Length: 266
Image 1: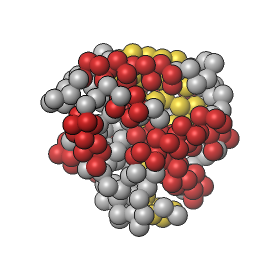
Image 2 (image 1 turned 90 degrees about the horizontal axis):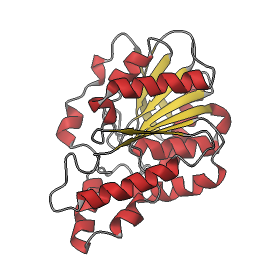
Image 3 (image 1 turned 135 degrees about the horizontal axis):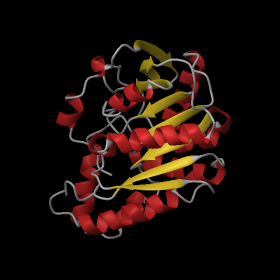
Image 4 (image 1 turned 45 degrees about the vertical axis):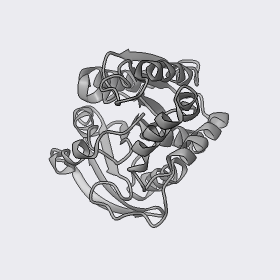
């Protein structure tokens, strides 16, 4: 799924994050900018898309009314320093693992992950299952999305799509897809909610691309996400890729539902 245009990313500011505490944390991968807010109870950690936009912050603020909600900028995102080496889903998952320890965030946590953040969450759950109580994937990137989508594109269209991801040089997206695919082998049996946008590819449609066909492929791979665990829940949202912008009530409700499902609701 192509990331949101840079202009829209920059229009969102972490400084608007209510009364939560904001701190810089240094981990092996670089500098993280962590914000947490909320009271007693479970912790929900939010993982943003490529570029680290802050569109999940309003959802985190609302979740903070009932749980401890945490959001952080990864190296090179927001106001953090650029990473010394290119990041991947595996290195970002390692940073998350270290962050939970260094910042004394109680585990297990629920991860709420959008787009590229979904790849991080899949790797994190596979590598540290004891730290992850459940996942909510919001129109998450999928390990096979590139191969299956490219199969229905012309060479010129493949280049158009690749150029979208090339705008984010801090992340090796293709390597991240492979790493998430490997994580499938050891993915734990944990509660999983998959929220899929039914208009993610078509609203808006990239000029010159077969958006309806791309949307069909997207729905297919999201169905496969929902087959990862026996009790996975698949929710179709009549929205664009940023489901939490278009239908925040749905996303908040699904976060509350998974907290109740795992018995961590306050």
